[in-house]
Image (cartoon, rainbow, N blue to C red):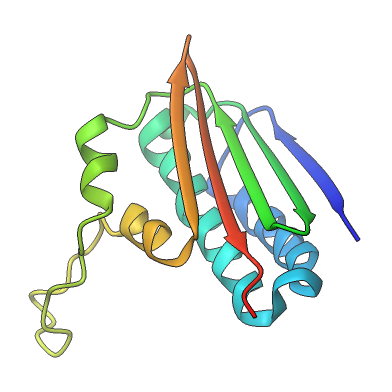
Length: 144
């Protein structure tokens, strides 16, 4: 059964992301199972954290998050009006950021892996920035 939810944050902060990501996981689980719902939750957390940290910075700003389930799987769309994602950053997200030795603690990157994680676990990721509005759409299909 298809369903949809929308959350609007007037002034986003990292504290706002957890409850929304949990609600989206619960919305997605009947459609995708526990693993797929966990993937969509992780992708949302990474994307929303990037908006808060890099799009807006400490001053925060509005974010709208829409989640919909259906026969396609689960689609999450994040709207914000912060700084856009630079084109080269998005293009490089498709390249592996996981080519380090996990046993060498000094080589493990401290950050910069969020978009790579999103690109790896989602079936489809689209982004556009138009007239000051950024729109990131994440799709996780039902897998049989």
